[in-house]
Length: 142
Image (cartoon, rainbow, N blue to C red; front, side, top):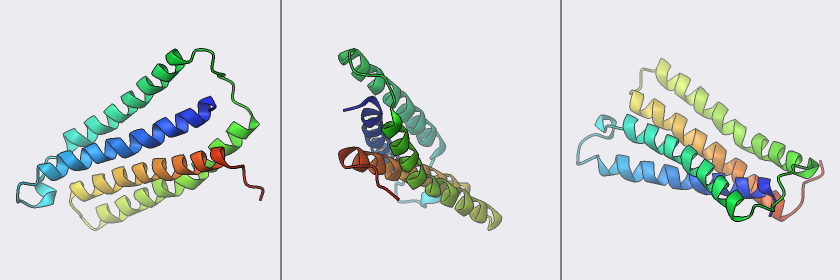
């Protein structure tokens, strides 16, 4: 497994786990009241920060466990990285557009923040899955 493939796996798993933790914490705070009144900012910031820290620590851990692994990035890695980014980026745009429309319609900040977070996570998941699938197969010829 190349360095970039391992990074794709780490980021994919961390994105799913981080968002799952966020959902469990926020939905656990509902307590029969309306969802928009739940305190979500702290869990959102902690899970995003925790996911970033976990991904960095996992990459460091794998590098320490296998110090002889190649750190080089070849043309195939670059193509796969570009392909994964192309697959994931539309969700960032969708999230930004949705958040802008929600803000213009005076939606609650809860929904705006959560649609942005969801779209960031979907971007990471779709991009990560695309990278992993291509690493396990081949780079498509267009």
